[in-house]
Image (tube, rainbow, N blue to C red; front, side, top):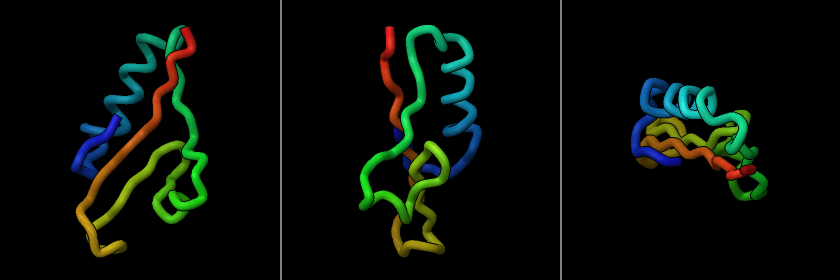
Length: 66
């Protein structure tokens, strides 16, 4: 799941809402690439315009565990 915004309502809250209804078949995976470490916040990837001189964005990896 990814967006071109850093707003929690469009990011974490969407993920949390989805998982609350589908937790038996989906889970959130932590980023595992070392190149993403500067952008990693817990299990999310996020960029901020004021920190990284790039557009703000959000990403999360959702696994089907079905």
